[in-house]
Image (tube, rainbow, N blue to C red; front, side, top):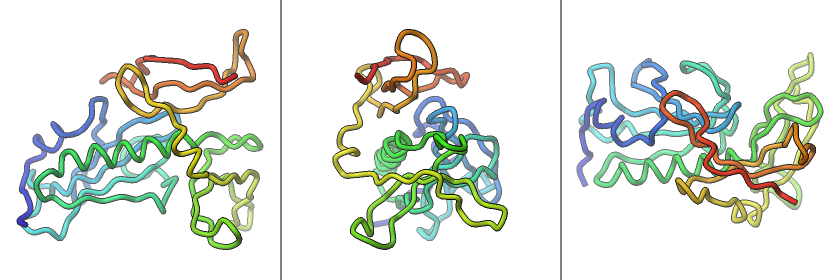
Length: 207
């Protein structure tokens, strides 16, 4: 099946609202804010010429990174990189990929020990080998991961991530820092408007 050729404008029309242009190295890239500390980075396959390649060697790719500007933010989940080919239907597949990234972003939060942003890793050994876990991204002076915090992400936990009743996006878990529910956690919608402000669709306290 032949690949589709599209322009920068056509690609941007396929992105969800609230995206931010991240720059262009060999292709135009975009950031989709998910939380205060996590974005989905999307590499469009649209070259500097303003159109995508004529052959299928370049795919559309997505992964989670720390929040930031441009293309230099640190990846938070290398094993979660996703890609889709540019054959018919790429727009819907792209939105599905971004939604998968948002669901996994619900597990990323600051480390309770050092406040560094956590990362998602694949467990290589033991009874949970092959599964994903959330681990602290801080490193020691010797360059080794400090492993302040480590928790396995179970399939049940993935299935239990609720959706926003307003926009349908995956909610994220946050710590309540003030008010009568301080110390508890809550599910909140991470959707932002085009100005980068949270839209506050819903806020559900977890008892």
